[in-house]
Image 1 (cartoon, rainbow, N blue to C red):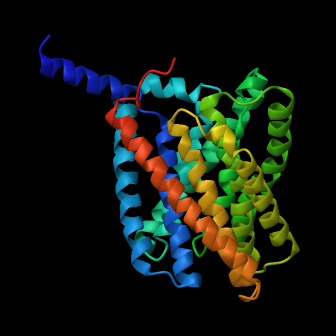
Image 2 (image 1 turned 90 degrees about the horizontal axis):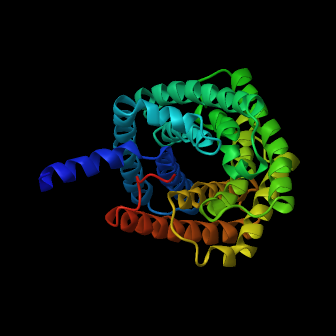
Length: 327
């Protein structure tokens, strides 16, 4: 076999194992973009930062979307395997969530945002009920449960944020209620799994950060629906801060952690917490500087985190450690 043929076969096989978890990269970049956009509006940071990030996010979304579309066409059986996998099935909602987040990033461009919102909402609805029926119809082992379970159901909380001005309030309320309901249930289930059935396997330890996302996004979504920063909004924010502190207390668990694409699970939740803190500072009339200081600290930490994970991802791609058979 010639060297060219060997290289082509290698590229083909790597595409075959292109993971659906790659859409978490889009979620991470969308999150940091929105965090800097909010920081521009409230903390008066230069607009150029989020503008550049928005173009990078769009480019990554197109590249990752094209690669996965090719995989669907060329390796449909591999996609079906992912859809029937007890862990990977939950990451399919990252596709719809990415679309919804992109609709928020480009919300001022209605011709772009509205189709993204409609498509994202449709896919999110499908993935939500697909995941729920999957859980109910399969004999799932406790060891297979992990915080990634939040993705297909709690992703519904993003819909009211993306749907501002695009959909009826009653419909947005429905998705918000669905997400909050399952957030409460899954939190209890997953804490039971982690405390009483052993720690998560190494590659899924980064998904612990996902615990931060539901209350953070829930607070932002609630304010979009009601326009008020009241006791319930404050409760959601404080719960998010508590989960953030828990993750900080567990930081030693991540020191020698081998890089997996699941590291991107750190990024969006941290960005969501940053946005929630900046919004709290705004809604409390810029009086509670405690929120301002936390916002700046969180923004810096999130920026460093995204940069580090991006560097490690590029290094892993160069070493051909991504898009391999993980059986």
